[in-house]
Image (tube, rainbow over all chains, first blue to last red; front, side, top):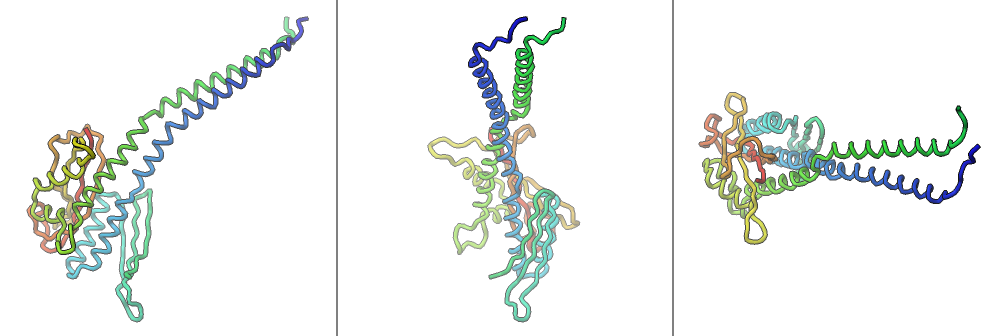
Length: 123
Length: 169
C-alpha cells in the first residue's frame, strides 16, 4: 500500500497562502468598484439644494407684504415642488402673538426618500 | 477497487476547485457592476457647478440693487442675457481655455387655471437632443407678473422655478 507522502509540506502551505491571498484581492477589487458609485449616488440623491432652496422660499414668502401675493406664492411653492421636484412640501406659520414676539414656521419636506422637518423661528 | 489512499490529495483538489470557482464568481460579478463609477462623481460635480451658477445669478450684486439678475432676466424675458451670463459662469476655467459645459433652461410656473406650464429661457449653441447625459439644477425665484415669458398668470408676485439641464460634451 502506498504511504501518504508528507514531503514538501512547505510548498503545499505556500500554495494555500497564495490562493487565499488571491481570493481576498478578488474581494477587494469586487468591492472597490462599488465604493465610488455608492458614495456619489448618495450625494446626488440627497436633495440638499432642493431643501435649502424651498426652505429659503418659504421664509421669504412669509414676509411678503401683500396678503394676496403671499397666498399665490405659497400655493405655487407647494404645487411646483410636487410637480417638478416630486416632493410634498407643507408648511404653516404662526405670527407673533401675546408675549411671544417671534414668527414660527413649521416646514415639512418629503420626497419619498428623504424627509426634512423644521420649526423655524424669526430671530 | 475502492481504497483509502490519497485522501489528502482528494481534499486538496476539492478545496482548490472551490477556491477557483469562488474567485471566478467574484471576478465575473465585479465586471457586472463595472458601470463607470466615475460618471456619478462627475455628475455630482456638474450639479454643484450648475447650481452655484444659478445661485450666483439669483444673488443681487450689492445691497442697493433690488432685483437679482435672474429675476430681471425672467421679468423681461431676456433669453440672450441669460445665455451669455450662464454660459460665462459655468464655463469659466483656470487658464485660457473654456470648459465644454452646455445647457438648456426652462422656466416652470403655475398658470392661472392651476396647471403647471413651462417656457424655454435659453440654451447653449449645442441643441439638447435627449441623448446627452445631463443633470438637472433648479432655482426658485419670486417675480413680478405679468412677464413676457409667463403671460397667462394673474398679476402680482409669483414663485417660478428655473430649471436647467446641464451636460458636458
